[in-house]
Length: 235
Image (cartoon, rainbow, N blue to C red):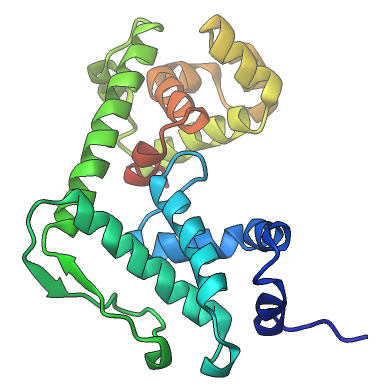
């Protein structure tokens, strides 16, 4: 028995709220991918308002879809983008608009929507990310203070040579892959150098020299600092 295509399925469930809810839940990854392409960054459900807007838009697409006009997912993609544009337009007072078509994005003329956005939308997103990054830096500063460390301490401990950097990354990788040791570090504010030395075969002195850098890396990589994680290139 053949299963209905997504186009046929949408047409069949238009009046069934429960089935529409199931469809939205099933297509959450698709919805998130559309939003991420539009914003140019990662998003998470329960955190980013844009995802809530996109889910409502997906529901709208189900209601408005006409199977004779083409593929549903292409239609839903364009409806989501249009509603995100509307959202940012409402967020900004400046009404000067420019035509915006994101580069390297699929766009079906069959469902072409009038997409005009405020010239300041890109700046708005950049300012938002910058502010989130600033707040994350303040949180990291507080975490470092619990260890009696400052950013200057971390900078002085940062590796100057590629070989040293690789050694520190090896230690960091080991810690991040060892739940018990990671838990000890986070709870007791203590770096178990003996255990790390035994497991990695890296001399104690080398671990001690990179202690502050290693601690800072573990704090960031194990914490909820997504903007800082994207900004810092560990490798």
